[in-house]
Image 1 (cartoon, rainbow, N blue to C red):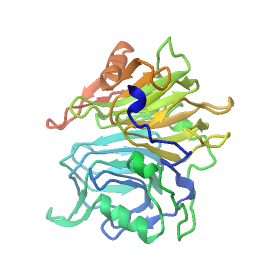
Image 2 (cartoon, rainbow, N blue to C red):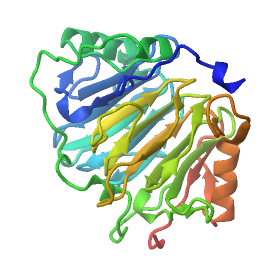
Image 3 (cartoon, rainbow, N blue to C red):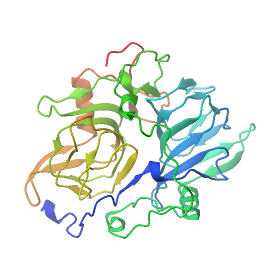
Length: 355
């Protein structure tokens, strides 16, 4: 019975989330000139998530990504200097870097903040391609511990433990705090000046709207046929019925407020980042209020199972296969990336694409 998947899980609100505007910036010696708002670190998988800040003029040495990475530019502009990823990317641009990719150094052309999900360590290299330092999940964990920052839980069992949200340093809001960050992904793409298979202006990707669910729309950014991971932008103005996350998921609210589990009546707003551990259940997830769209990023690491309530038969299962089929059906082009060893399919939005 589906109700037996996690019978002891009693959600209490924001146990899987954190308001990034309430976090300080921290520095790690292994990542020179980067600043972090630490979000999650997994000892089991080595994955970690953070908001990263680079001040204007800061350059980073060549990077070797030992695990894949995806990012969304929230403010500012970055320049990737050379190689397969060479480009300039700004607000609203989503990117994907495969595992084992060696990336020529990048420079912050402006003060820049971006959401980054790391699927493994990153090596900072010298000009001779020797390893200067490694950035790992445990470095992020250690940095958070030193500042009294409690990272979001990784499992259902951890979600049920008390959390201390107090940090030793003063909170610093994101640069986009107080603005309608939904426009990062849901406005005109006029002015986009690049075409690149690893970076895409999310504003240029059309919304996919299923006629049977008119209040929920998707932008498909990445589908992995190897791992089943999908990266999406979601516009969620309706109600998602009862469901289990059979695989984990993470998301960052950009605009609107989301009614989340046993959270407050006003919901959770822009800047709140969530991690849904595998097995998490929602009886309903919906927009709170009707004055602005609820828009959030989403990495979905496994299938989502829908039903009509605890103990009822499975009504539907949503996985990477359905996201790929939806993109194809709505004419959204997904293309292979430039690294032959990585089978991810990435959204393609040439300059001038209609929204």
